[in-house]
Length: 255
Image (cartoon, rainbow, N blue to C red; front, side):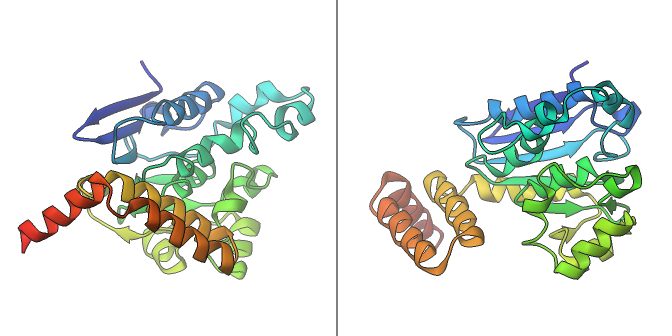
């Protein structure tokens, strides 16, 4: 049985964590399968990605027993060495989704802990079920978030909230996660809502969606002058293209 499945239809890729008997806890094999799934979508003819979890949870976090196989190894080789550009293997697990050129929507239900939360944070949008439970869980195991969380969390939550979540490893419900900025919205059926959003996004101009994702990424990390230049450069590259002309034609037709 594949640990991660990918189904593509109507320009939407649905990627599902598929270890339901373990609440989709991330073993080292599954870690690599998630990375491979993200990399396989680079350059694909898709307009949006939906991340989901099979069974009763999105992802209950790292499989702590799986990590025991790393004991005794050189941690500089395991963690400090860069394996994917500016990331290591564990960071690539979450950041590969943020680095895709199309939007990613995570549909969250049940447990979304530790590695699972950091994976969800790699998405552009997070839709949570009312029963979803979220936690920056690493402190429970005497660890710190190290799977991209410290890149992905600061733009979303205030510093004091980030510290509270990290220091305590407390579990919060979907309503609290929404209030603190960890999730985008709550829906009774998060996968259905994620698919509805994905259909809307995939129906937009492909080149404009990719440009928008690049531009928003710049806006989150660059200074004023660089962001303003990115706005101008992206717009100049879009105006008059076939995708833009098609968008105008659709807009006129709707009127």
